[in-house]
Structures are given as C-alpha cells and as structure tokens.
Length: 196
Image (cartoon, rainbow, N blue to C red; front, side):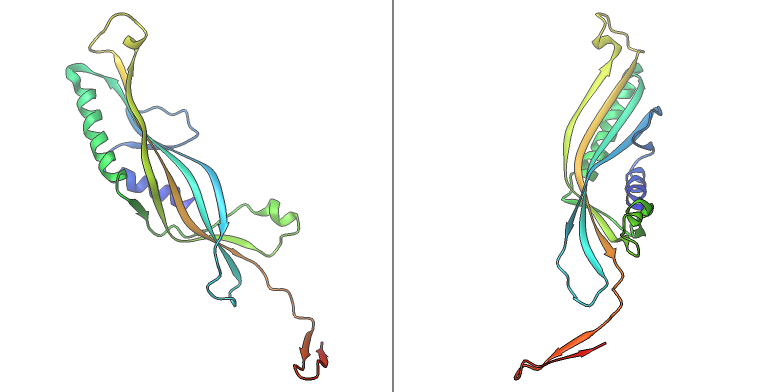
C-alpha cells in the first residue's frame, strides 16, 4: 500500500539506511524493517446521508525494527548504533507522526466481487497517523555471547524495535440500487399512492 511506501520514505529521510518491508530475508549493514499486522476496520458515522460510501477507520499494528550489522573495531558499531538510535527515538517518540497523501484504491477485490459484492470498491483517503509508538526493546548481540572469548573485530548486531498503530480512513463505495417504485403516504388520511 502507498501508506507503507510513504512511511519508509519518511524514515529513510532521517538517516541513510536500507529499508526492507517484511517478510524478507535480505541482509545489509544498516536496515529498517517494517512489519504490518492485525488490520482492523471500524465503521465511522456518516457526516452526510446522501453520499455513496461508508467511511471506515482502518488500524494497522506496525513493528519498526532498526538493525545495524558489522564489526565493532574501535567501537565504531557502538557509536553508530547509539547515534542512529537517538535519531530514531527523537522521530518516533513524538505524540504522532503524520504520513501525508496516502490516498489510493485498494486493489485485488475480485474474490469478494465474485461472492456477490460486485459494483463496490474500497479506497484509502487522505493522510495516515502513526500513533501510540513505544520502544519494544533494543540490544546488542554477537558471537561472544555464545563463546567464552571476546574479539574486537567480530561481527555484531544491534537492533532497536518499536511498536505502534497506523491509522487511516477507508471509504467503501457501493452502487445505489435502481429505483423501482415510490410509495407516498398522506399523513392525514393514511392513504398510500404508489408510483412505479
């Protein structure tokens, strides 16, 4: 979805890195991995009863994982991890992060349309907000954690993981049925007139 691409773009703008959207088994020296799960749709109240769509609030659970791999010669990896972690903390610890212009149609609805829902569509509209972001944890890991000896030039990994919610609006457009008849009722005499 466009909202994930925009989130990656926003995160990459803060510091040079490689962003990978899960699932992936790609490796790099520095990465941001984004995992989106648990999509929920909740109907929103209609503002105007004459519109041809039902608005929904869409909430996605998001895990953002910053990873740094490499050797720790002269504590280079440690310094780089702390610097990048400060930047990420500053960015994600705000009250919310707005991702603008995420409007796009939701594609691949053929399975639903085949079940009798023809003529309707889903469209993501407006902007999205990343809210309730909290640090899940951060830590270093190396082969010395397994072995009894330490080497300054061994490969190490640092991971800083954050969790939050991505909120956006989705409109479900639906076709209005063709008008077949109108029944008019006189309030005083309860007489009904049918127009076809």
